[in-house]
Length: 369
Image 1 (cartoon, one colour):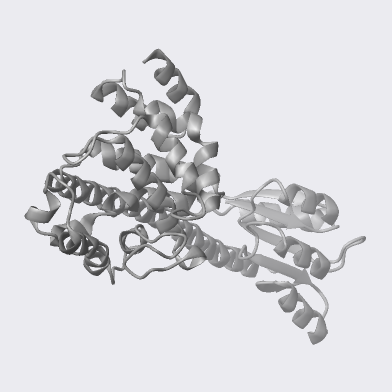
Image 2 (spheres, one colour):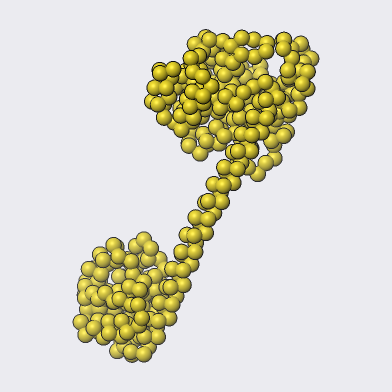
């Protein structure tokens, strides 16, 4: 335990040092100059401070006030030494942050008892602080485990839905990665962008409520079938709605709004412009672009550059122009994800790399492919 003793009397300092160092595990640092003591306190941690009231340059109350402003010194025990009997001085010292008082001339027994008691308090404070740190570490680890489990459940549920819909895991990965790129390009903060990224694979979870006959029909859908298919947005919102999880709430928003169009002709609510949640506007671009580039039972895959031009063409009608511009600015990182010469394994590497936000490596892999 480190005790700082501050007094302009060498004999008083010597007396206190002898008394206090007789207590186990105590080291006393003595200071004749209060300003010197204050400078040392800025770089060294004290467990207890004893300070005289009458000192040249800086009295005890002024010193205590400045000590209490230092980081980590809000609750350090401080004993003020004084021969003054004026109650106003004691009140001022208490207001400044003094913990205890010792009257001069100092009684050895009283000094020893007060120091022991306050050091016991300090030991308890340190133990509580360590326990608080340990608990914070444990809580952080538990939060991470829960977040990892939540992500895994989201991903597995999304993959299950993709299999039923004839999609692939790569579709979900690409949509998620492009979504994150657009969000980052828009300047959305990292936590919000990550939530959108993790939640986006659930955008079509509502298709669980669509019949297989409609969902897996190889040809174009008629009007009734199209009406059934469009119900999946509302189904998704119903399935995911009311969750306590921020990510699931984000997923519910995306599921309900990713088929709305900027010009108000989308579904299920015919929202327009900024009435459409930003998460839905972002995922809409990633989902449509990947759908255009993917082969389906009812259509061939579009060439990548043609799909890119289609997204740009639909800016201001289907899509939010600001989100389209963000998509276009990231085009050099998006394009390699769809390289025809890349196999499934390399495509997975490209997506994994893009997910960790290292575009230069993605570009390198894409060029090599």
